[in-house]
Image (tube, rainbow, N blue to C red; front, side):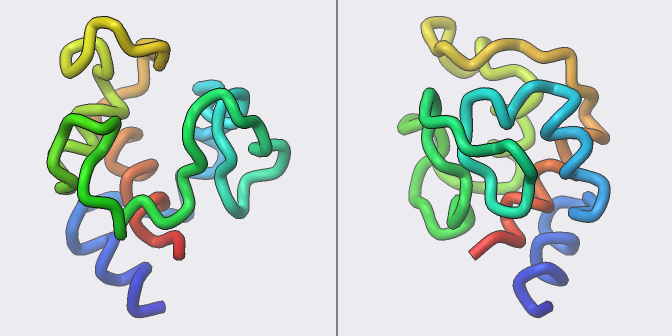
Length: 104
């Protein structure tokens, strides 16, 4: 519960809203995401424990702002990334970031 509360405070998002977003925007098609049914692919890195990582996508220092930016517009950060621009909104990216930061 402590990790979840911290994730909400850091991102301004609601982790409870993220699982359907992770499905709608195709995240589970490439990533292992704990707690999201069918999110068991190994195209991209597993997303559990992202809050404990030093970098996001190997290039951005791990901060809520950077994670939200990466989720929303990965090609602005790395034009060569395989991660697609999904059309996720800033508000939805906050929910996803909150969920990811709440994971062990």
